[in-house]
Image (cartoon, rainbow, N blue to C red; front, side, top):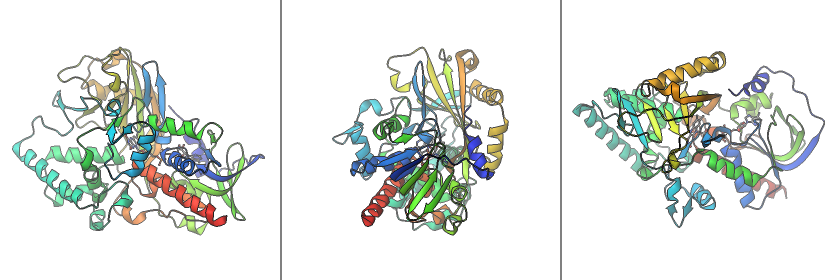
Length: 476
Ligand SMILES: Cc1cc2nc3c(=O)[nH]c(=O)nc-3n(C[C@H](O)[C@H](O)[C@H](O)COP(=O)(O)OP(=O)(O)OC[C@H]3O[C@@H](n4cnc5c(N)ncnc54)[C@H](O)[C@@H]3O)c2cc1C
């Protein structure tokens, strides 16, 4: 189990942090080496601005796109795929071209998720795809079709785009109610369709449909329709594959890990940033850590105190090392494997892209959004329940579909994410964060928009870097 929450809680409890005596100067300081911070660095490098440092509290970069290593290969700790970007997604396509994933408009075959991609364990057997089919009645199917038609219309409206800033925001009325309330209003009663909609919200936002903004619920389905048929793009270590390459470009000399930022203060026209091993003096700070930290890091600043507050979803993920594969009934194992009505979100097979060369051992990454109504209660559970209790719950869940799972697993590692992602609750469209709340401070985390996905993190990181470059130019 990871335990980096302790330092964060000291910040929350206003404990005193030692101020290191070493002072390091840098024109630009990036706080946070998740996809947003790494994207800011990528953009600065592309523009020829290499004089920056990047700090991260954890022992390795990547944030929610971190990965681990096992004898059967690497595996993700959280983010594990990117939908194939459409023609309009120029930033992501530029990056993927640089990384050799996209050549002349074609995606490298080995990075497109191989078949079988998804299966659902329903009524005691596996079915292909995640939309429940086994036992679905004509009424259920009629609702599926009506739902898809509405989503096609929403997609065609140009409102639901990635990044969020690329779309118009005319239907703010849809941000005034929950996704469940919208489904009720539209007369969607099929228990299967309602389960599927709820699964989508738990999967992308870590929250139930009953708490999710209807605008965000629709966005999940409508924003990616253009490219749904092919892909997604995935790698054994998930989005860690991209993070790893961006981290390599930043390089060890510029990335300082294990550097928890505990304080930021203006000092003349510069920023003084207190880390664990040094105080950094910078002209510009690109803040790519989550924004809920800012009032703790920059106390008594009216502009910071006035920032819209978001709530964050707690998540648990587990990596199960398997010495052998469980016996399968029915369909062969897929990349993404989901159990109907499970409290969790199933598992992804890290060795899936190698399945052509069948391996004896594998790693399954199991996802569990603690999507109860009160995220604070989920965080309490994360802290209070033991490794044994979580592992037992995971194995019990998986046993429904894999009765021999306990005999196959040799190791279970857990990761607790207390504040994994911003929750798009009703009204979130009104709470987009300002890019630069204070002079020389640029916000970059995906929570600026409130949608926690790789494309959004990349966009926010690049926009923050653009702002920082303009500011440097102005200052000469
Ligand atoms: C379980 C899970 C599964 C996901 N799956 C997907 C997926 O498949 N596809 C997808 O597109 N998205 C997925 N996401 C969303 C994911 O959050 C985004 O894709 C993206 O990685 C977010 O990047 P970020 O840089 O905005 O934030 P983060 O990844 O949270 O990065 C913030 C960084 O700031 C650092 N930090 C925090 N506090 C401090 C401090 N005080 N000092 C210094 N550093 C600090 C953190 O250590 C972290 O590295 C998933 C998220 C989770 C939790």
